Length: 294
Image 1 (cartoon, rainbow, N blue to C red):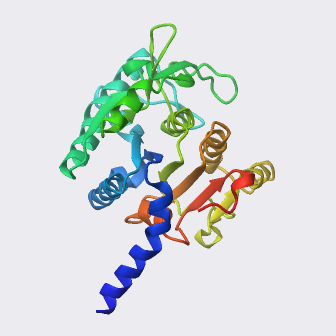
Image 2: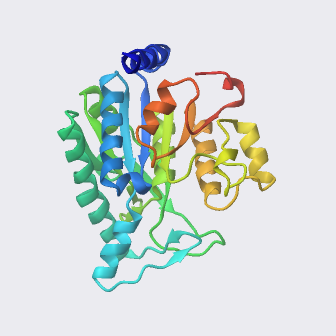
Image 3: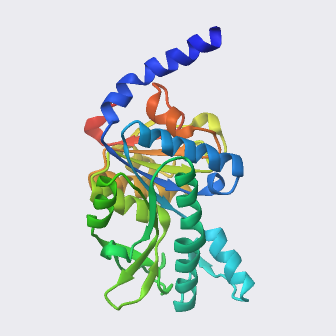
């Protein structure tokens, strides 16, 4: 009986959040261990299905860098990186599109369909969704066909959502030169969420959230305002691989997203715990004037 009462209390706690977010748009960047571990994959799909059943409009943007590297290795092509960014020639861009928009996208679509959710896999070339320019390396290097999103045409995504589908977006775009561009999935999710005016952007990662000390999970920052994030970046509190993630959070806020959540995708049902409970379990990044929102 005690367990049943506790379950009921959890549902009651979720009521104001369900009321607030029903009908809103949530963009989820799906990557890390949550895409590899079979049990975590099941948990993520259940969370996405629950969000959809509760009336939220869901868009999934997925990564797949390890799968791209694995396929390149199989065909005898060595991957080269500059500060974490893949150097991408035309052959590599073609492989990225094949892997991301082929096997990975279809896998996610099938898993959602198996959970009773209608889903469609698309990439940034479909419906002229993601128009790109060349993104230089950190020191201005030419790293090839790596895309910087310049324009987002949301028509196709909005049409799919209006028909009840979950768009599953592969981070592949097109350029004015007619070439295919591989886009970092975090930047892709940020640009798409901003263009859609999403209520929430969720990053599933392999860390507990944004930490004051990257080696100490107990220093997780539960709520972070834009000005605090800028200050932490400037003063070196946020370091290493979390820097581009936080920059994506700030970019999304600047382009109209209400809140951004950095979650530990290794924790089962992390999305539900973050969105529908009072304490949450990751880091919520908000605009300065929205510090006290749900």
